[in-house]
Image 1 (cartoon, rainbow, N blue to C red):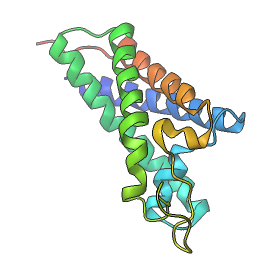
Image 2 (cartoon, rainbow, N blue to C red; image 1 turned 135 degrees about the vertical axis):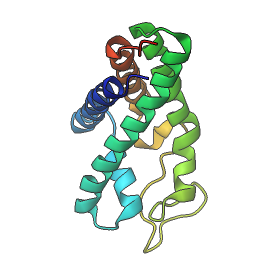
Image 3 (cartoon, rainbow, N blue to C red; image 1 turned 135 degrees about the horizontal axis):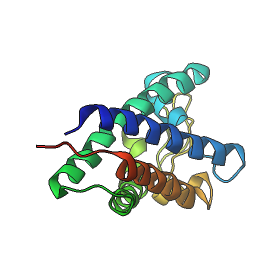
Image 4 (tube, rainbow, N blue to C red; image 1 turned 90 degrees about the vertical axis):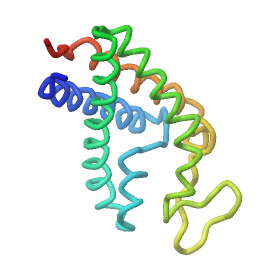
Length: 160
């Protein structure tokens, strides 16, 4: 594994993914903010949640980069199409599996089955995160596709 290439392109890919997601939120294409959702798991302070969530999201992006790199190394090749394919799979898992599970682990989020309480006030994402807008799945898939394309295009395989 080419550690420094994974670190560099994992960071770049995560910055681009986060920028696409945040820009889409700012443009009103989605109401989902992954840094905010992640940050409010660790703090009830909504201002600090963005800071903590962004830092945790960057670390998560690096960790996921190593999963992508492990696939590239096992296939002995890396290109935009392979990266994009993994990115689409990654985005699908986020939307179909992870987002509906968030209320089960998030201390400040209501579930699909119970309403708000003084401690649980955040709206759950729902299947495909559709509670955050009709375009949320599209934006999420585009961001993860881009992340994968960046990793697949620029990661340099380790030489034996």
